[in-house]
Length: 347
Image 1 (cartoon, rainbow, N blue to C red):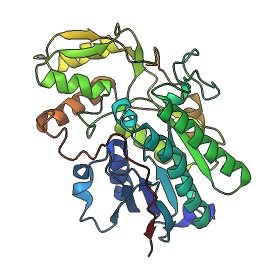
Image 2: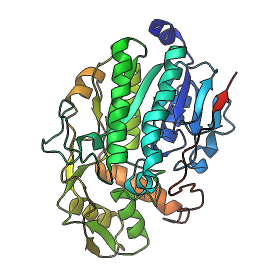
Image 3: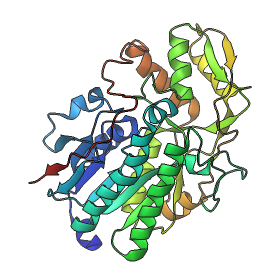
């Protein structure tokens, strides 16, 4: 089956969460490579503006649906990328039950489709599976330090459960699953209201408002530009041999939050002063991926320097008025009920 897929010039690719920040860039890249792309998105946090330029593309198709409801899929599929889940704390905490169900029920639905149709499956997991790590940098064999009942657990534990599903199906021979643990990623099409440190600082700086730093600002992160991350996801999907283990994808260059704020201030000189607020519960103190496995197995590592990527991101936000479109397309809901509606998609 895998040899047949590789022999095809134009692959049928399903991207769940394809209207999101990372997903829409993945749609762009796969279409540019000549593939047939179906984007599945509920627009809970994804935005129609991200994929608007693709709507008239002959190889692009949109299915508006929640993956918790997608079961009876009859379209041909060679590859499935699962990026469908709210990924920033304000968004995934707005409806924690739905976040958990997206990770478990939604991922299970997509894996069942992959098993039935023989598709290769890439799961977008997260560095959040490491929690507030006691090992630094984080290697894939580190089991993490996660609060399994805290406010971030819906996402952290949901993604851990999704990984377990993927590897159980891989071990059983039912699905060729590959798992990417994605570290902090930034770039154009980030939501200005998503609560991530890069978008927060840029939006505040462009508006001339004080830039908010949580805690002391000495906590560290590593920031990967979105185009680099997309190349990593595709490399994982296309790897001749299944790695058989999770693969970290991120930029190992470590920077304090204060350092990041300083870079943003240099790029946006009229930014306001830095103000400090209390650190959210379970916020990790340090984050830095060990990407040795990605280098060895995929031949991948990031190439875009931070200042270059931040300048592109600042320019993108500035061209759109900074935060003018913060809420215009948001379907974000709080405490919404679980739904049982099945979505059938047939040829």
